[in-house]
Length: 202
Image (cartoon, rainbow, N blue to C red):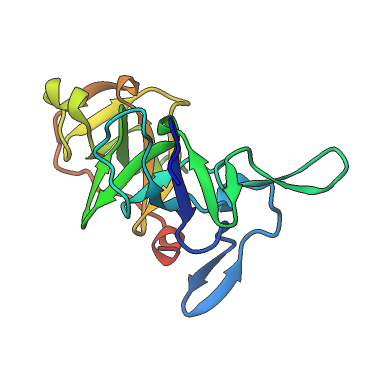
């Protein structure tokens, strides 16, 4: 059971993550299947494509696009699986729907994707809890490395290209390499930001 161009994956846990744990109590945060924010985006690799070589191996954990496991209502109001659905608990997943993978205990970005850790807003005159369009590179890639932009660097990025993920209790933004537009020098007062609900939902 191997796809020619697509990975075959299965969800880690259930297809949807509709609840979070807060102080030992379960809080239901979603009851609608069409809400993409509650779709599980953590999967395990069942098979790799035949058409090309990849560093991802069978058994690796991957962070994927939310539409892979997502369910929809058709025009008649009937629930339907996404086009990625294969059978039972298995789904096809193209390479551009994979953003991050874990081999053994180390996370690595996939392709031209990278992940940014947001910074806490220290300007008390602003209501936003985090700074906009600036953060710390958490997971880089080869193209950024060639530009001497490495994990731990303070970077600026363009708007509207980032997607939010919760990775091991950390709220991170996924984007492409070309969304990174500048490397800053640290001032010494930077502080990483992750809301308590993200840590509780890990």
